[in-house]
Amino acid sequence: MPSQHTFILGLAAVSLATPAFGQGRFRPLFDGKNLDGWTQFGDANRTVRDGAICITATTAYEVNIFDTRA
Image (spheres, rainbow, N blue to C red):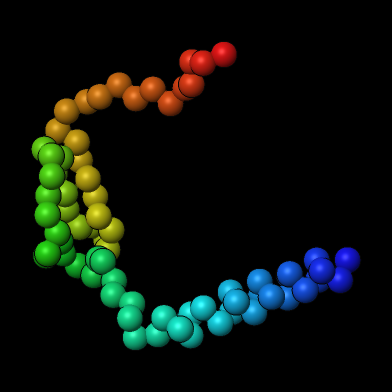
């Protein structure tokens, strides 16, 4: 039991201290206004609407999300 408590306390201390180490180095990838600096690949149309990136496909593809292995 003591080793489990030590592990949990250590994990909590590391997770709380981690944001302090990264201060000043964070750079957002998307400003919520435009796609300046982004490179477009493929045929999909990309726009910014209400602060979100919206992607509209130009062709339809069948999506298979099932695993057919037994």
